[in-house]
Image (cartoon, rainbow, N blue to C red; front, side):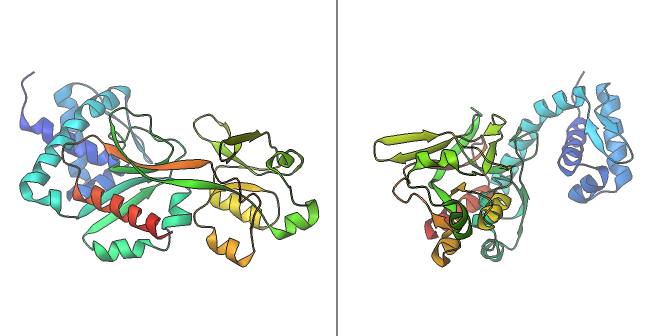
Length: 301
């Protein structure tokens, strides 16, 4: 089959459908009508001889053939976009839309309340945040940038370590009044400890304490297990149990005495925060701008 420009046009529309999740959103993204999107997809399917999308009244999803085609074609679209950005000067201009796969802790407890500064700095850029338990294929999912704790596993990703966060073990005064204060990390085996689920393993994170060259792993248990760090912190504040949290975004609660740092001498454990994005020769300025902004916020903590 010989190539013609209609295939490239159809793939661009297909990418908009996948990124937007519907024909309506795709039409908004690329500035054509819903029926125009539908006709373009139908022409592409006829040209390729395969059905690319399963359509219902509520959703549009890729077929197996469609997913394989999209995953192979999308990197080439990205390369064309990158080349166009460079040629037009957009590689140094912060504008358009930025889709960020954001860690569910970092967004509400660190960035929230500070994002207005970024919006004021770059008024021509809109940012869409996604928080998910699992990171998928950034290219296939149309994600420009991910900010996540823990080193990414994707070998094709460009990574930059932003910071290493301390891990604090916290309890409220009301909890300590009822159950007493543990004198050593090993005492936690007799306490109600709020658990946080590791999405990679499907099991709660282990509780580890580091002081100098000394490391102590403590088996813990408790009545509640979370995937939402903000909810876990609220239960800790309410006195439900002891929680291990990343030591950012809780300074105010510690200063007022609403939370107590149980083991200030055991802050040696660190959890790295990474920024990573699909491999490109010229990362768009919008990606660099948001990474630099996160870096700036972290230095102010």
